[in-house]
Image 1 (spheres, helix red, strand yellow):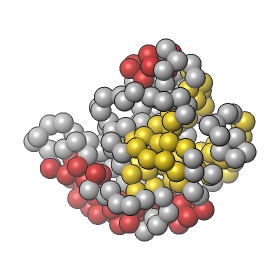
Image 2 (spheres, one colour):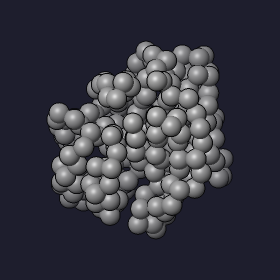
Image 3 (cartoon, helix red, strand yellow):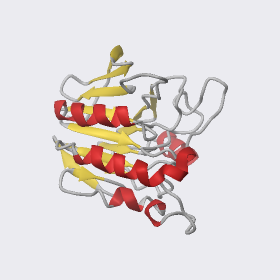
Length: 227
């Protein structure tokens, strides 16, 4: 099974168009949050139309989780942004969103939304969750800024995390792959001024993960995945 992992598109239309064209080459595409760009809030309805249209062109299996740019808890925001309502409205057969768990290719997946309680993890699961564990090379940027999730860190350190967590949030992580407890955590980061977004290709048959930047493969690593 081949899985495409991307994150932090922030309403970049070229990247969504690339995804719509590329997803068919994979058994599953996973987007781990920040699909929208709240720094451009006055154009949020335009962003929503663009993202919905692009994701609507993806006919192969697709899994999404929300990030901090996709969801608000404040009822004063547009209703579509409250608790990432817009994202949940995308749900259809073969498209999974916040709160969904599913099986595909003998693997189990869970989509965990932004600010949602962490579920109990099974050792053979793959989670989609926007924030990496705190105090890790995946959550820490070049200036030492840490945007990680403390609860996820404690879960993984205790050996109670899932097999894999696909994350994002930190645009310039010090590393893209990390093992904590029994859990492998992946963050592709976010490229600047590139046509093709950073992405990770997971091959569960070959038991490899490969980081791609600017459309080019940078490094491939062999790791274990549930059979």
